[in-house]
Length: 320
Length: 254
Image (cartoon, rainbow over all chains, first blue to last red; front, side, top):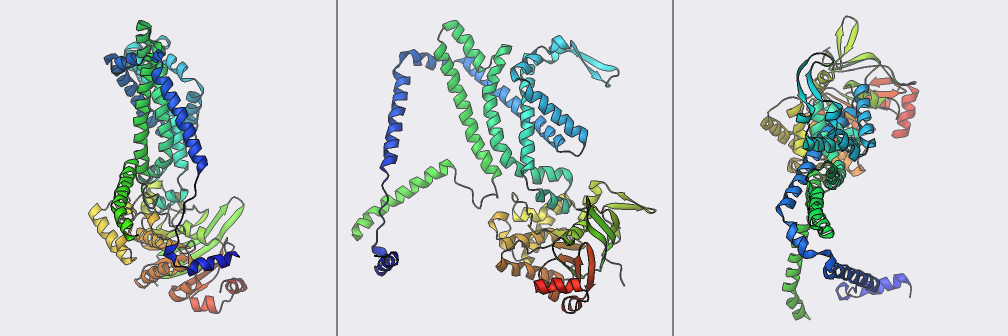
């Protein structure tokens, strides 16, 4: 029978009497089963092996000294990201400016701070007092109004925050600059044609559109920095990684304490990933015809459909 | 005769070695509609963009209602104005782009109220009342809270027209406003433009819509190779063109 003949025959029958049978996918079931077994094995290996020391993990997970360390890690991350992105935005605007010296200065900054490893930069800041004993405020190259001891101005915590922020700023600058470049030049032209003031063009028209490509990259950076703060341990600051080291040096439960740290890093990055999802939605306004539902809305949607289907089922049976 | 609303004199503009405008003179009087036609690459869009100083010109001048756009005159010199000043003078000129260039992250209402609030310092309430009025005028009262992507091309261009009008400009420039639209959407935009023309808005329109030119234009200008080759009332330029280049162009588009 030729294809048109089949179609005609199908059309001849009443459309409602034809039932669609979904295709079977045995391959998918097999792959799913393999993964399920592997997962079960992994869980089993984690739970049953006493070497993981789960009771010790439990005992130290919410230990005050660990919680303090988590808080300090959060503080360092927040300082690094906020200061880093503020300075990074300034650098990005400098890089895009029409003044050649500003653009090259920003380029030089990014070049320098991206090239030197973070751990080295941190040690430089930590040892700043050895390089410059006094820091003076006054006329450049002229008389100083007052001076302070470098030690007093830049303690280890400031040095760590500063080091992280300045390093982060170099990466943030490139991310923000990329965001600005991703906005259609026509947008600026339209804003200029409407006579919108320059600063308003940047912050009301360009930046919100740039955010769409800035946010995913910034999310990466923030999550990177949460873990990057562990580098600060070389300055003997009580952030999470340093603190668990202190504890396992005392009690000898290395694996358990590393697990404690790992669990907290997981928690922090999970919270940040969720936050990123909602921030992205916020800046996605107007870019899709309708925003996709959030995971929560999706779950609620599925439940409603299920419930509705369950209510309908007896009725359908009755019709038969 | 009254002083021209738009006065373009001896304008030259080059991109490197390429001379795009080669001595253009054009006067548009208040309430007049001037339609510029011509082959692509003839300098129509560049001329339009020079009028509101989106392009800087090399020689000559452009004045809107007797005031230079982008320059201040002292003696026989023109001093280029600072950006802030240029932006302020631009608020007297509405500009409608071929690709709309609506702000996609702002609602239709916010698109229309943005410039009156931030460029002209109008109170928000007043700007919103004006937006409501203008959106009704372009037939989009029900779309004030929609985002541009939720609209058809024709609707977007009508919003762009409302946005340009929100500045209460002395002249509105249209740069091929229907060229990016699906054919069935061209009509609704042209209808809005016709209504504007009837209401006495001074307009300069670059377009390929010869029918629109015939119906609405007071003056049709034919440009070719960076110069105005011929200009006059539509019946003269479109039906009895004097210049062979005008005839050649019209024979292709009509």
